[in-house]
Length: 282
Length: 246
Image (cartoon, each protein chain N blue to C red):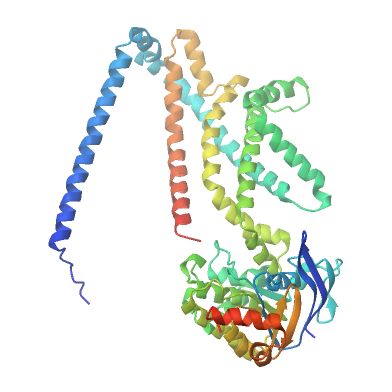
């Protein structure tokens, strides 16, 4: 079978030509407005009376080059810590979310504890949790107290676990009750219905917000510098202190942004895919 | 009797949905429940499947009181199939996985055997090529046929059908009704809530007209649909004829 190539009619050719003209006009307009706004911004910043001083103390290329290796080395700690903490926080969140949905009188204390946990740790500022863990726990002088890095990581996991638990729980609750009814009508127990029908759908639905929280966690990993370990921010701080120049902070900031980009890209992709699937119908 | 409902009462707050309903269903019998929306058809089916707890009365399955709180509801549901108006297939599973979930997880049958049985059923209902498809790729009629197969592979003693064609486009109703007619030929015991009076007349051994939570009139389809005794039944059927559904 040969596919007949459709010849557009006179009127359709006219429409195509008009649309093409409009498209070119849009691109030109976008380029022009970008250039104007960019120029205004550059003039505004570089024309500011204090620009030379700011440039010296925040954007000094020599200082940047001097401290880059130390900051990169610190960043490696951030990356390792982030991967371990993200996995642990997801696991913790999943467990807490499931505990909160358990029914029956036997589980009342478990449910209550899980609820109390998500309520308190979502309210508690991360910095305070890090201080409590990194300085409070060693203060007990117990045998085998882990290092400050591990304690700081634990503070992150416990704080973020509370957020992730709520995201997963809202995912569980967004699964329509008719799905549970269908599963139970087939003879599945509550646990089996949860495991095979509700959770897979809940995790899929909560993937975009989960990833978004993970992006937030990636930069908050830097807060453990407050507890003492030499991560990227701590390394930058040392540079700032010894050279009286803020450039190392800028370097660390740029590195954090670069580090976040891939994960942000994945989050956008997953969100877009989820939205497209939703629009495709149930 | 496969199913025996005795003086069943079910309320939602102040709303009395089932008010002393009594209904028996014998082996291989097909009973059609008809009645206006809110007359309690769907609620009765949910109560029989223990998805809703009754407030009084007794429901027996093969003589066993399944409304006794000491009974294991999962074990009861394994013997009763329920098909929903909105199909309720699991959207994250393929057609094949939807069908084999209960045989494998509940009845602990070998995966290969469950799949083979599922393929046989799919072939029988003309969906052999859809085994690997996800529910959102299927038409409403195809989804409903899969949902019926999903209930059947558990070899239920009793199949409950809750307005299984109400969500379908008119041209897709036929394929689902044909399947139910075939099941009757197999001797499946069924209770179906329906708005399809023509279908009830063809396939049901008995029609029960529900009104205000009670069976107001029951008997052979020709009698209940043709020469109803109760004025309420006549009124209901007159409205249905007016709407062009008989």
